[in-house]
Image (cartoon, rainbow, N blue to C red):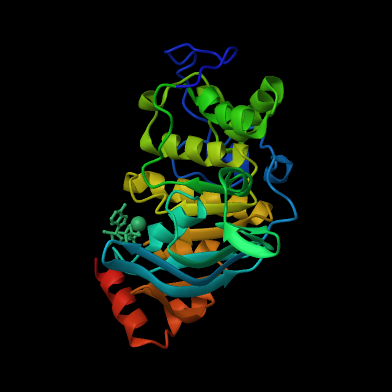
Length: 307
Ligand SMILES: Nc1ncnc2c1ncn2[C@@H]1O[C@H](COP(=O)(O)OP(=O)(O)OP(=O)(O)O)[C@@H](O)[C@H]1O
Ligand SMILES: [Mg+2]
């Protein structure tokens, strides 16, 4: 495990005061039942990606796990700065799509584009060849992800969870990484938790740290995979509102997977209904949730609403 030489290493949080509410970060009512902060910092002042976000294109992408064909010549596009939600049945391959974009899974066939660059391929002498590690390393810098199970580094305090990646992957100085981490922790309402370890935080707090950690890498593309499904119900809205505000205040390209249809409606410009390896239907949230044209979408939405 990499060691930081200067990050605080206290195993105890210095300050056990309750986390500031979302009002402090977003100027809106938080769902944590914490009173409004007195000195709200406008979210526009937060260090969020502004401009230059690339789009995403899947071109006839095939992904197999053994004989299980999960993506079948999948084609779809997310425009630069667009916010798209993927919905579809459990086990249909939504997480696999995000993991391919994070280069956590390898693809079998097809091409994935981030902007005008291919993710899994590179050009050599005018020929498209499999990407080498250097190319993958450069490409994955553009993409950040927030996972269902938070996936914080359990042996590092909050501050180091946020500074480790920028320092080691982006080559940011310790001072700069710490300054940015502090700003992002303020944004997510956890400025007083920078010395806490993940086990000392609630699920909602851990997920907010995970959001801040993803943003600390200054991604141009943000992937959200069922980010509230492991949270207690009373914490869900707070995290969803935070993410919606971050999306509204930045130009980041967003690809979100969720079973929470209100969140999908709230955060996205477009919804893709995905099943059996392909996009079944797509459209603005009002259309997909209000007047879906495909029976498969209607059945899926009915099942989700009944659960
Ligand atoms: N590492 C793996 N090895 C083998 N099979 C896998 C692996 N990862 C995923 N799968 C299979 O790929 C299919 C798609 O899985 P995936 O996790 O992408 O679905 P999902 O749409 O995200 O489901 P959920 O809504 O339940 O999260 C499933 O059949 C799953 O069992
Ligand atoms: Mg999944």
